Length: 112
Length: 113
Image (cartoon, rainbow over all chains, first blue to last red; front, side, top):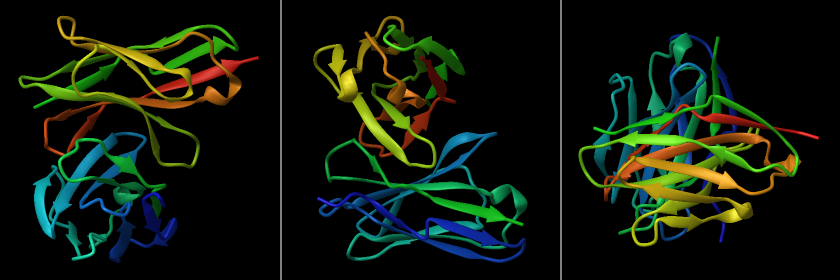
């Protein structure tokens, strides 16, 4: 079974731009969560989607948003990029009724 | 709210030596516990998890962890490490059915020949 896939793997943007990252969960997994990983703050939870609804949200500004499609694929969007948004963005998926999350390889975003 | 403290930011050990990576957590509710490993330029790979039952949990690559409720700890151990175990290890907790992991700051395990 294919794992969680994330595209693109690397991205370079400039301050003020916006970016969209994509995540395809493992087949059958309907919950998708997003995390930000930085050297200073570590791994932080962004949000979680299930059946196209955001069920949980971390402590990030409104510039960070997401959505989930009917096929469980998810996208996250960051508007008005800041230098501090440079990070590895990780997506994880899980089966309904389970609490184990499986992670993708991440998208490394660099903001110049 | 939950929090996780990984007591060592770096752990150097010699190849074939045993290793223990320490993790303490804080939570006012029952939680699930996880250890993930991250190799350079990769995502997180699940090593093992404690959901319920036996407090000694065995995972992949010869790792095991013991859940200690009274000490709120979930230390990771391996009796004999290999060069390929060089990576960063993350302890995480999740409130039941919350799908929200709270991670520790990570422990960088370095294996010396």
